[in-house]
Length: 323
Ligand code: CP
Ligand code: NVA
Image (cartoon, rainbow, N blue to C red):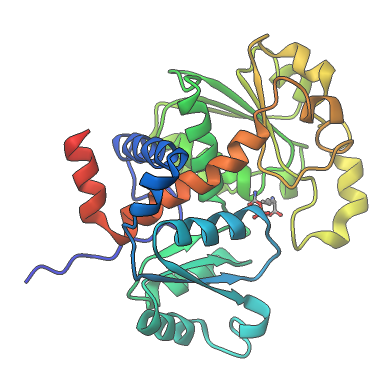
C-alpha cells in the first residue's frame, strides 16, 4: 500500500514553475466554467467534502472567496472565529489539528505567527492552506500572478515593483520569485522593520533565475515598471504603529507622478483592503491602469483550482491529461 503524503499550501516551496503554470491553466478553466451557470452547477469535484476555516484576523476577500468557492465546488465550509476557539490559549494547536482532521477534509487558516500554521499542518492529517500569516500570503500572490498570466502580461523578465512595506504580501512575491523567473523590485523604507524576511529572500535568490532587488527610492524603482504593486502601510496586528508608519511611508504612495515613471502600458495592483490617499492615490486606484478588482475576483477562481488540486487530485490530473 502506498501512502500518499497529504499536500499543504503554506507557501510556494512544494511547487516548481511547471506546477504553477498548470495551476494557472486549471484556474482559467475553472473561471471560464463559472460563466456557464448550468455547466458550473453540475461541476462538483469536492462534493461532500468539508473545509474548516479558522480566521484569527479580519477578512473580506479571503473569507468570501473561500466560502463561496467551496460551496460552488460542492463542498461545505465551516467558519470558525479563531478568537472563540482560542488558538494556543483555550485550545492547543495540536489538538485543533487532530480534531479537525477527524471532522473535515481540509483546513484554511489565517493566523498571526507563521510557526502556528506550520504546527497546525504538522499535526493535521488533512491539507492545510495558508490564508495569510504574519510571514506570507501565498493565495494572494497566486491570484495576482494568475491575473498577469491571463492578461498575457506574464513575460520573461517582467518588472514588478512593490512599493511599500516588506511584509507578508511582499514576502510571498519574493517566495514566488524563487520559483518563476521575473524581475522583482521592493522599494521600502531603510529600516529593519519594513524589510522583507531575510530567510525567504536568501532562499529565493539562491533558487531562481529572478533578479530580486531591495531599494529605498520608490520613484527610481518605478522606472520602466510593468507592474506597480502596493499593500497597506499598517498591517493587521500593527495598529499601534499607525502614526510612525504614516510618517515612514509618506513618500511611498503609488500616484500619477509615480505611474508616469513606469511603462505607459504598466498596470497597478493592490491586494486590498486599500486606503486611498495613503499607499495609493484615488485617481490611480480607480484609474484605467488599475487591475485591482480583477486580482481580487481571481482569488475565487485560483483558490477553487487549488482546492481541487489538494482535495481531488485525480480530477486535477485528469484535466491536465486531456487539455
Ligand atoms: N487581500 C485579502 O486577503 O483581503 P482580506 O484580508 O479581506 O481577506
Ligand atoms: N499586509 C496586510 C495584508 C492584508 C491582506 C495585512 O497583513 O494586514
